[in-house]
Image (cartoon, rainbow, N blue to C red; front, side, top):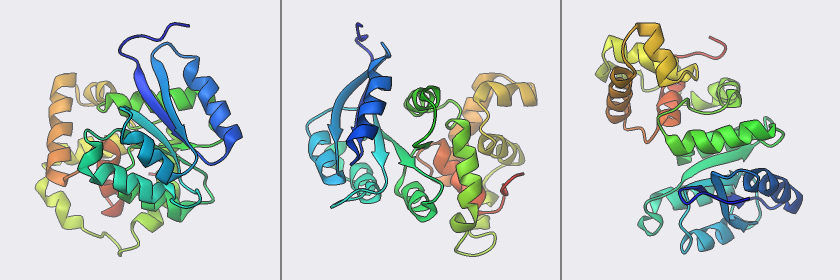
Length: 229
């Protein structure tokens, strides 16, 4: 199979060789994706990412020596890795605290380890596009699941940050939290997709969020969106 010249460059980071092998098979089966490196620890991943350009990193959370949380923090916070790739965290529902920490570290999406191949591919393409739906359906379910931990600072923590948003921007943020795409939001409000993109851009800027997932985290933390709503 021939990989396209503008293929999305992917790095796999997981300490389980069988997991990496399975993910590798899925990625390399797609002409628009290219697997450029693999690593079994966070430290090894950072070493390879310092010399390998990548667009998306699939990052396991629980690994020896350096876990995915620390690796994500360093990757997204160190100028040596700029422009930093998007990080999709590989997680399970029984690791809530790890998932929350990864969100706060700047992860752009989530993937359950038992997710079907189509969700893996959707996650990679979604975070690479940036302005599309925030992630597969599992992201919303995961955020619902860990919402109490996201709000551990107290009820309606930081709610004053929402005061910077207009009423329409709050409405758009709620729909973002539901995992809806710009096109779907545009249909809801009977406006152009370009108008929705403008709203999303202003929301990210006002909230100081690097991407849609981080903005949705704020929606959960402030109580604007509640689990199961």
